[in-house]
Length: 128
Image 1 (cartoon, rainbow, N blue to C red):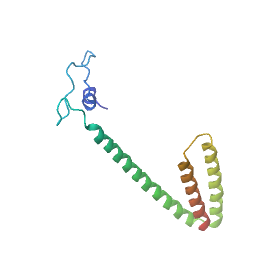
Image 2: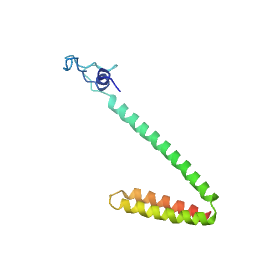
Image 3: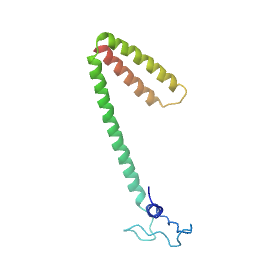
C-alpha cells in the first residue's frame, strides 16, 4: 500500500504530521507549471484510463474468441447423441439464465448479444 506522505504527494494534498495535523505549507506545484495555473493532469489521466479500459476490452475479446473456438472444436468431436444431449442441457441452462435476467432491467444490447451467442452455439451443435 501507499504510505500516507507518498499518497498525499500523488493527490496533491498535504500529508499529516506525526501529531495528526496537516502541514501548513501548500502542496508543491506540478513540475513544468507555474504556481497560479490550473492543473493539466486530468485530460492525461482520462486518456490513460480510456487506453487502459480499451486494452482490457481487447484482451477480454481475445479470450472470448479463444473460448468460442475451443467450444466449437469440442462440439465437432462429440458423437451425435452427445451433441443432442449437450444441446438440450444448454437450452435448459439458457432458460434458467434468462429467468434470472427477468428480475433485472438490462439494456437491449445485452439481450441482443446474449441471444446472438446462444443461437451461434446452438447452430454449431446442430451442424456438427
